[in-house]
Image (cartoon, rainbow over all chains, first blue to last red):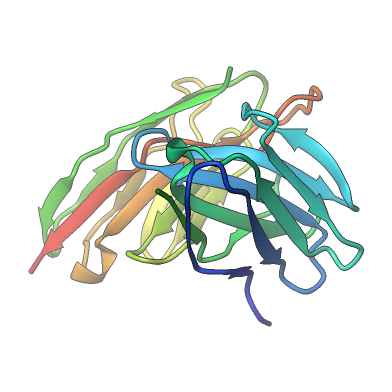
Length: 114
Length: 116
């Protein structure tokens, strides 16, 4: 079974631009979560999608948004990029929203904002 | 809010040494607890988990016991190998969804270096 895939793997943008990252979950998984990883703040939860609806959201500004499609694939969007948005963005999928279930992580998208 | 505290390291050990990475947490209710490992250039992989008090998670020689009384989930391995070199993250997921964020809450990560 294929794992979680994220595209693109690397991205370079300039301040003020917007960016869209994509995540394809493991087949059959319906929950997709997004995390931001930086050296200073570590791993932080962005949001979770299930059945095309955002179920939970972390403490991030409204510039960070996402969506989920009927096939469970998910995208996240960051508008008006800031230097501090440079990070590794990780997507994780799980079978459902049961908190006992493992979240399977993708390799991440490395975003650099210049 | 919920939080996880773990030693950040780097922790440097010789091959075949005994490993302990401490993890303590603050959370309401009874969270599920996890250890994830991240190898260079890769995403996170689940190493082990425990979902209730006194549960012991184990995998690939690593073990951790959910201690409710001390709010701890320390990671141990009896004999480490060079291939265990990686960053290890302790994480929790709350049991109650109060409408706020209930994604995984991670510690800062512990960089483990095993020397031959």
